Length: 239
Image (cartoon, rainbow, N blue to C red; front, side, top):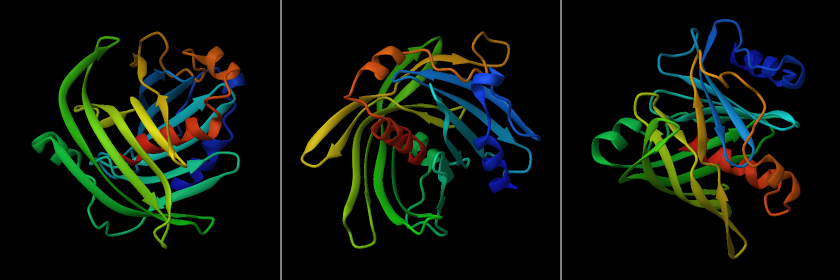
């Protein structure tokens, strides 16, 4: 069911449809417009495990990323679009991510492995920590986190590193991107995918598929190419 659901979404044509429609048996509950010219639609499906939820990310060219997390915000599976590559969480993580621990103690470490259907395999280690700060964005109060993580291949070669801040909403049990840095060679590159607008059912902007913030800047700038912007979404899906 899940693979079919991913593939059905991969052929959504937002330019023609104008709004996001979740697959049959699924319900969209939130749309988030963010800096960096992307919009995400969040939805839950009846056939999934309790607490699971999906996110569909769109840029100006359409759908480019899908992910599913569980009730503890573990990154269960994801798919990158064009080319389609599916990635899943390996069974029995060494240190499973725990949203409950983060809320209860202010800190959560994680260590897990990921497999792609193209044969690639990687290992992720890192942490999330509450900073004690809260912010209100578009009327929604979020708690700020600090994070770091490193992803390596099985030989220990570093594939990517990131650090920075994100936001959480304890009732939605989800992370949202913030300001971060990505290691590229010896240089840390700044990124900002912070949320700007939250729309729930009945709100203006709910279930849209066209991003509205900083799109002109992204299109005209060579400092934020698509691969780097997509890594930002990868980080928020993992945490």
